[in-house]
Structures are given as structure tokens and as C-alpha cells.
Amino acid sequence: FSTLPGLALHPDAVAFGAAMTACEAAALWAPALGLLSAARRLGVEESVVLHGAAAAACARAAEWSKALALLRDLSRNGQAANAIMFNTTAAACERANHWARALALCAELRECTLRPDGATFAAAASPCERGR
Image 1: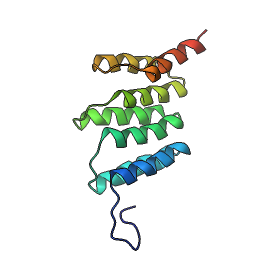
Image 2: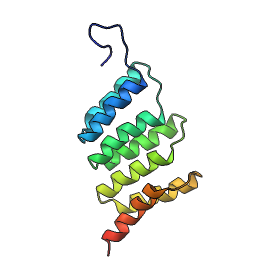
Image 3: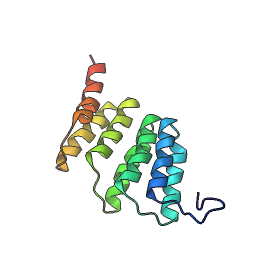
């Protein structure tokens, strides 16, 4: 994925994001992480959008620890996560039945002065609903 054969084109953040979104649709978390790694190697600027696309693939496959690592990776790189990234990571935890972690992420989102939205409340409510 370093260059497109026969063309002098180099993939950018949009191309990597699109490829990772395709990985999400098929729950292919490992290739999505591989694409994020390839983007880093090629000097594509890392962003919450690229991390979010990789995290979404992890969430679809219930790979909660991988999604959480991507969330933490943002702060290590000096970038602020957005509500979408928190919601995606909480959804991954919820899908893997790590409800306490999902609830903790919802609380952490508020500590970061981000506004919860419908997806945040759904990630928090779903584990509670199952506990009935």
C-alpha cells in the first residue's frame, strides 16, 4: 500500500481511512491496525480520524483491548480524543461484555470535558439493560 502500481500516487489519510472503513465493515481488525502502521511508516499524519477508523474495526470484532490501546495511543501522541473515539472504544468494550470498562469510558469522556451524545448513553445503558 506504499504506492499504487503504475501510478505515481501515494496514499494519503483519506485513502488509509477508506481502507480501514472497509476493514470495519468486515470486522477485520488486524488489517486495519496494519494499515494504521503503514500510514505511520509512510509519514501520513496521524489523527483521531485514522485512529477512530482502526478502533471501529476493532469494535466491530469486539477487540476491546485493541480499541482501548488506540484511544490511549492518541494521548501519548499529544492528540485529544473526541467523543466518537470514546464511544467507539466503549462500544468495543460493551460488545466484549466488559461493561464496567464501557461505563468507565463514558465517565472518562465527561472528565475530558467532552459532551456525551446518544451513542455514549447507548454504550452506558446497554450493559445495564443486560444486567436485569
